[in-house]
Image (tube, rainbow, N blue to C red; front, side):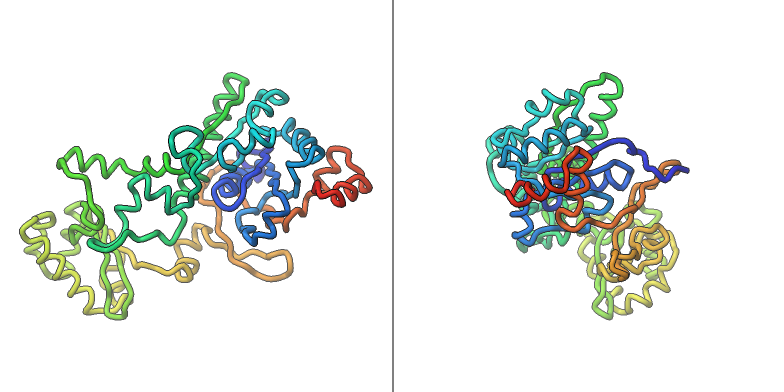
Length: 382
């Protein structure tokens, strides 16, 4: 087993901000790539420096609107394997750091742009955030209670899955292509595109039934008692995911209603079964249900808060929440590495830099002296 990581030897230049791009580069950094995050100091003033996802990275400050800043950028880009940017379409072109410009000095570069709506189409220039991409793609309309407004998820689905994860997949595909051809390429990631890619089940049931699913009224969204959430006596919740009849059968037996086993998807008795389940689960506390349902083949789980999930024994056993030293002698909880490789596992090797912490050390690699670095800082280049 190697501690280096599967992407050791690759260098990533990350110009992105906030969540999608930095999440992508965190994935690459966790698996051994050297990631140099580049930001302008004005973004520090916005108070939106999400440092948790800057682990395993070096962070430098650089003003790309200055000629000297651009010179430093191209020195970095010439040596990089991957470049990530998350500006609105056209911004990198105006700055002179677009794919065509970088490709002239580094034809093997894998250049990834992450935007809300992509580089083409009528919405390309629109501003947006996670909720907007979910909305356009038809995903948000499926989330929430029937008859009530759509519910915004408590996590950033479009940013993380649509932006960060899709970008990481695209980059790895482009790297594999480069292995065969020796050529880099441009990657256009739209978070809205990726959210549309979340709808195969919705389209499958439309083709099957002739009807598009509606909010909280689909086969896998509250319509039937076998795939639902239920409140318990102590005001907590549990989820039931007994899609297959063999799981539903065990649940019905545990609740002493064998007559419902063959009525799992019966439309005439649907509401009756739902009402029974809601009343039944409200009769006992979540802890009592954990004892009753236990390890039986039902497909059930307690609905946990974030604080409870952090302490969950499964999450801890899989090292998905781990306690680390924050560098100041204090213990802090961070998220682990979800992709488990047997020979080259990812790891947390370095706590996040403070803003611009590695500027000096990175510039020194390119021959900049302390005096020159001081002058660059005075001129607002770094």
